[in-house]
Amino acid sequence: MTLRSVKSLLVAAFSLLSVFFYNASMAQPKEHETHEQANADHKEGHSEEFNAGDAILHHIADSHEFHFFTLGEKHFTMPLPVIVYSPQRGLSVFSSSKFEEGEVAYNGYKLEHDKIVAVDANGNVDESVKAYDFSITKNVFQMLLAVILLIWMMTSIAKKYKAQGHNVAPSGFQNAVEPVITFVRDDVAKPNLGHKYEKYMPYLLTVFFFILINNIIGLIPGSANVTGNIAFTALLALISFIVIMISTNGHFWGHIFWPPGVPFLVKLILIPVELLSIFIKPAALMIRLFANMTAGHIVILSFVSLIFIFGQMTTVAGWGFSPVSVAFSVFIYVIEILVAFIQAFIFTNLTAVFIGQAFEGEHHDEAHAH
Image (tube, rainbow, N blue to C red; front, top):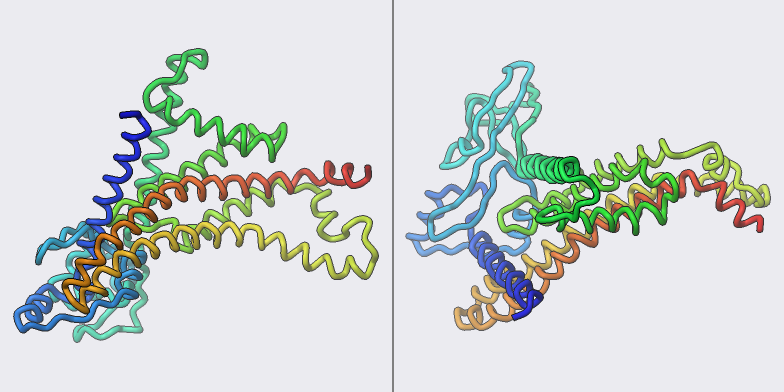
């Protein structure tokens, strides 16, 4: 058996295992339904109709706990810390598990529509109390984990280079990461940034590996869909926008406010268009990453949901359609692994392109003159 066959089998096995956990977690009760209510409904013979839309949105949304899977009546979760500050009540720190098991409120706060709100003694929302939520949610926890992994990965490789030197052939984990680093340098930085590529390599490598790590972790069942969160992609796009603006020169702004070689009336039309394009570029980075990563998760969960939808009609139909749904889910899951690398590359490459356009105006002018 060749190495490629072994890798294919490992990917297929991991995909099947992931689909199994997705199946187990999709059957969980709703977030605000207590375990006692679920057990009572089961004893009375009531089975709530499966809502694929609610289940999918619940899995891709942020929350205050990690829900891995459900086996029977046992829920395997990891609660996260709730950190709330109120000028009236001070600082409150407790586990998100306090909101479970039928607890309406805890320590003067409750979870309402995935938001921490202050309540009075009767459990009603108290608008007079300002509550600032600094809780460690799934997205925050996973971003911190990605930062730790990124720092560990880069520092370990740097230490190895420092100890062995650049003339020694890489080995182990260093051998796996170095081709990716050289790919970003030779195929992203150099073609778009020219002789200034070394100045921007630290940022480009950080962006690439940070997005890639979050994309890969997000494919593990029960993890957070960090890159599918618009706030996360907006922050990355904002940082890229700042880097692009810092890289501009007077020639770049001259093209924006007074395009050369264009009639006066046309310039009046082009000026607002060029100004708008400055903000469209980072917005495109934000939406592209968010939409692609969210769409992949939705497609996988949609195929898994078909098992439960057909299962509600008849048991035979549900079991009969399961192999088809699992096959499509595995297919999309394998594609998502590829998309995780592609989206990290596209975001990094477009960032390099936009930075290059910010200081390469003089070069383009010479080309147009010839």
